[in-house]
Length: 90
Image: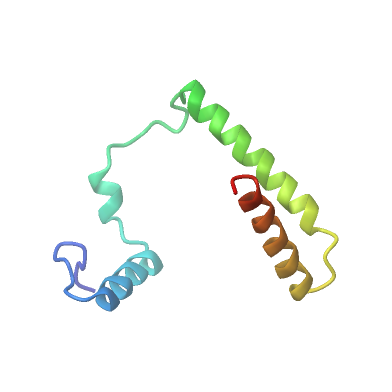
């Protein structure tokens, strides 16, 4: 397979196809461009707080969705939660 990351495709569909192909084939082009990070590199306090808050929100969402009976129930609960978030600001 030729390297699709070197040239920018002209249309959005080609971009989507090239990104999907790279993801499915495990392309290493991205890995070679990024510097190697130590697996145990220390994160800043802000990154740790952000990760902790994200995890807490995910746990809360999963807890709220565990009692759903079917897919339609899950979707309605997600819509209701999204509406609750918007009501906080408007």
